[in-house]
Length: 591
Image (cartoon, rainbow, N blue to C red; front, side, top):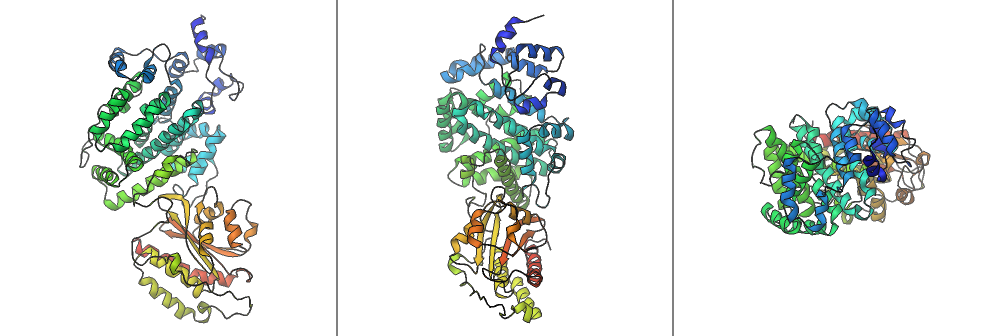
């Protein structure tokens, strides 16, 4: 029987996005000629409904949300009179606001269903070219794949694991909706990026302590900000005022007081009402019940662990982005460490890994230029664009002011052989003895770079290291045999995924690589600034690894106007490289 009132409601049909189309069965997609232009017309809707293809959740979305229950109505009626006028339409029964956000929350929950299989996710991803690129970019990042090169979606899904892939699909659902709000994209992008990083922290910590359902942690942390998203959409000025209040509040009670003053009710009360109205699961709604402080000490139950991981991770990211001092960050980290029961070293490694992976996920979603990435500070207190200090020590890699004068380049083909060729045993013994005296990685790498130029006879040597909190970012650290130093270091710096794809391939290797002619590399695989400054021809490049983890790479050549690199140069390099690798792993406690 026809339902004319449904047709009237469907006058303003929603455009069917690639992700939503991919989630429909094949028979359903066949009724939609093209998801890029047409809309779902009322007749198509009735056809899909008659065939039982659309679920109650999706059909409810197109016909309008279900009526709230008595409990929900009581909660809504209790807060509606106190809300700011611009927020009241969130609970207007005659025309709900944010149906797109409500539907996206349901999609995220569906993707996080433990019953979803690798084949299901592979099919969803493979049907969306943009999502395919995002998943492959993350799978090939150093943060997730320090040695593998992955080119197929099934391999990426199995390598990353279901939880990470579900996270990517869930984040894509959120980012996909930004085009609906072109005037509010900046606020929403910031919120999504922060939620994604917090969800990564929760997931990594949960996995480390064997939490039964780490994907539930990720979903809860990702959707924890739905109230903020609703406020940012409805009233951007109010959202900015709330962010300013967050930065000034020193205690949770102060924050709640400011929220009540600005919104009319505490922010989590508004979020809980939305969550109940949208029929979100109880495990998510329970997070909004209270703003009490997390217990200081080991979590004693699964519910306590769940809340501690999710809320603790969210508060950590809030502290990183909102606090002007490191005290709030350290206090939140301490709560997480004590609650999880992890050792200091293991916890510190996880914090770095989570930050790194969170950055890769947000970057893959196109959120890398978000203010979040400009404000996030690594947990060692240094800004993300600073060159990383691998260990604190007074004996560090020489700074620009202390770099030895560039070796004089000789164009004579019959120049004297390098010390490693004249006296290999003695030269190598001296080098080994110097490495034994190194007390940290900085001093050890400084000795290595200097010996390559002085003892191996290599005219120019460059060292670039990965930022430990963002493994997509290279930082030029040291260069010998060149002047002025600044442009050479700058050319060794930059993004692996966007500027240095050739360097990324080197970092995936284990052994050094002798490149007879760098001009044979594909166009765009090397940063243009590197080509313009170094004018590379023949060179040796080698990854630096501590265990299986790459920390940077070394570039060396003979210099301009000199003969190309020869196999004997590679053999000499290998002698120094092998001893340096042993030394790095000894200092790291691996050997």
